[in-house]
Length: 392
Image (tube, rainbow, N blue to C red; front, side, top):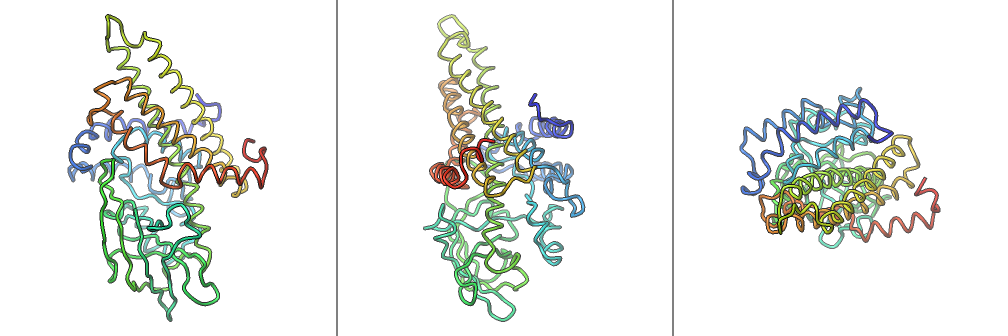
């Protein structure tokens, strides 16, 4: 057991592991063969269990209606949730701490509280056709203040879970005035006039959560739907990125653990040329390298979570979150590739966990910043703050 594990985190680990094993994993193949969809009563059951656990507000202070868990405890949970394919673990709304800290009373009553209760769901409209990784420099969507309203115009790509959401968190630049061209973050209800669904592209993975494209044509929202002040939207987005990059790393660790476990069971049972294939050095090397890869990624994740909980400088944390997202996503892809090889032809069947992860984990090297972008962030952090800031 990790030396920094706490009794509370260990309890959460056991609880969520059981939820994943007993409730989510049994429905993976059904989801895979049905465009990611589950029977309505099963989907409701999963959501109810997650909400009963309080997972929507796992990082929200107790006084704001959440569980008040540390980042370490949250990522222990997300690591276990990463052990299921087909995004079945996305069965609850996700609230982050900056929402509780920066929402107005109106926003808490109308958006935060419903998210915590599970009566509303959110999605993030940030990426654009020409501005995926370059969020700050290339966003073209605009918000223009007119009396007590903002007029939103622009087109957003790859809005994950938009088909299940009730509102968007939308990133846009202020069109005019003192804060012209500065980023701001807005809450935009999905049912407003002028919101146009353009496309739902099909992707390699089989999720019921789509990554849709929407156009916002002179969409009018009340000025009270801006989060914080004009011009500081990137602060919230950077916080969201740090959290999501840790979450991706955690889920990649969970996926890698499951892949190693299932590939090991298969290798110890499968016979070829009169021997269990687990006795062949080629298989042993693939499994041994996978164990080392996972152990290293998990230690990095846990230590960076501890740095977050110790309130390390966010500029240093930004670089560290890039480090673990980069390493863990590439680690999990290597392990998925080895697992497919160990399973052989079975590993190329959609009903096999290795095949599904082989497709699903590929996106983790792209979204929330490509591996190449993270290498740039890490290098820039090294130049600005020195090596010790990143490895201590």
